Amino acid sequence: MTKTEKSVNIELLKEKFGEMPFFYLTDSSTLTVQQVNKLRRLCFEAGIEMKVVKNTLARKAMESFPESKRFENLYPALKGQTAILFTDKASLPAKLLKDFRKGGATKPEIKAAYIDTDVYFGDDQLDVLANLKSKEDLVGEIIALLQSPAKTVIGSLQSGGTTIMGLLKTLGDREQ
Image 1 (tube, rainbow, N blue to C red):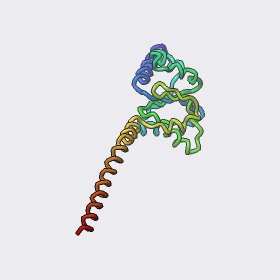
Image 2 (image 1 turned 180 degrees about the horizontal axis):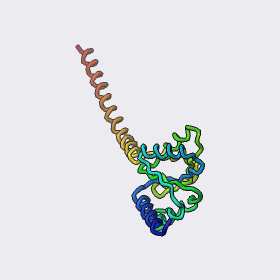
Image 3 (image 1 turned 30 degrees about the vertical axis):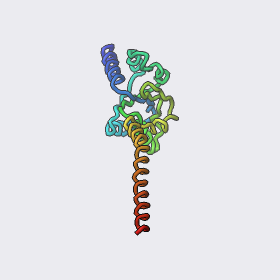
Image 4 (image 1 turned 120 degrees about the vertical axis):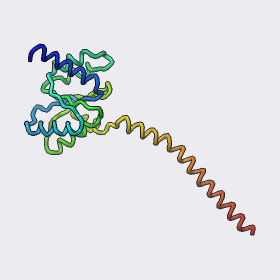
């Protein structure tokens, strides 16, 4: 790879790291060509971009970002063969990897996952990552929680009103 090609690849990686809030560093070194093609197709269908990268180029691209991004925490995971899964939904790659492994494959393994400046290391984090909720899910849950007390109060007032009306009607019927 020439110096120009390396510079172009670093710039492309910088762009991806800058625009995607979530990405996974994976090891797919023992997958067959057929398995890699299947994984790439599944990623494409799910809207996940898979890039096999040179670790040194990925590190150089990460080094160009401010410390607030906390990319330096990922440097230990940049060893061996690395494929990066870029996504805009935090749990999507983990769910895809779990489904892919149902076919008997043990790889790709998660080296690390970058989720909004938090870093998850190791393949043992797969279930944790698969169960992460999206921002939209969390907002929906908060709204439901906020609405719940109001609905309870309104329900109680409405049922109380019918109870009082029932008592008044019964009392009125007794007087007649």
